[in-house]
Length: 68
Image 1 (tube, rainbow, N blue to C red):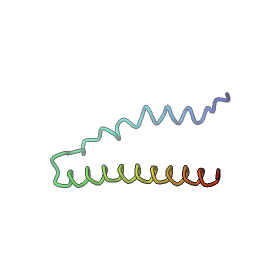
Image 2: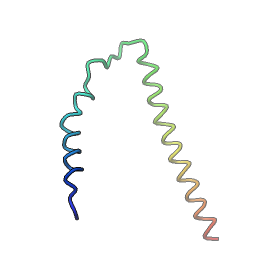
Image 3: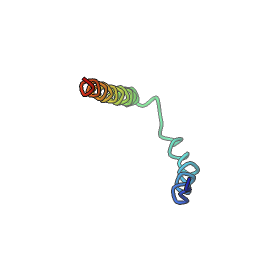
Image 4: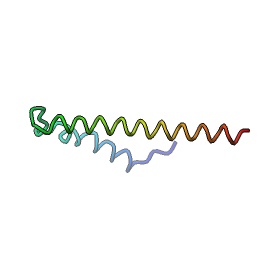
């Protein structure tokens, strides 16, 4: 297995220096838009799960049709 030095260095850099972005001081649960933002976030997760489920459904149904 060939080790890609640039990719490894980039992943190490991202792991070490991105923690500040995840723990910024502006994440306030008391802000009036907090509820809306959380609802939009969870709605986007549900949408992504639905899209993946639909793609899997189409893939497996197409596979069944081609086997007949």
